[in-house]
Figure: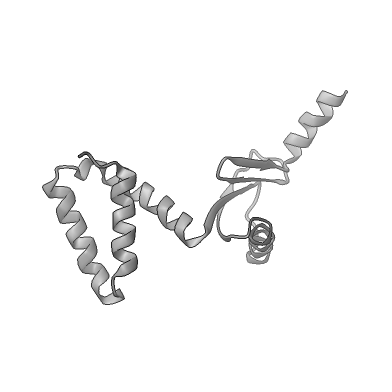
Length: 130
């Protein structure tokens, strides 16, 4: 039976979740050894990405990217994360992306959702109305 990277990632998550904190290093070492024995080390990057997705889903975490023209302060980041947490009813893992090409406003990305509150998007909307 061939296992998918998602199945392998889920097995690793379950093993880590069910192990004592002191034993987690050994679980990871055993996992890497198993990847080598199964000759699937080349799939490690995909397995790790699937593990992060599995972990986030299980722990109720929503990764969110906020794109702005300039860096946000810690207070602004906390405010955005807080509003999203209450709206989505999840813990928010906020990643900031500074894009000088963005004139102003912000763009949020999470899951398959994009909320574009940029000035560029507003100008585009105005052009469509004219």
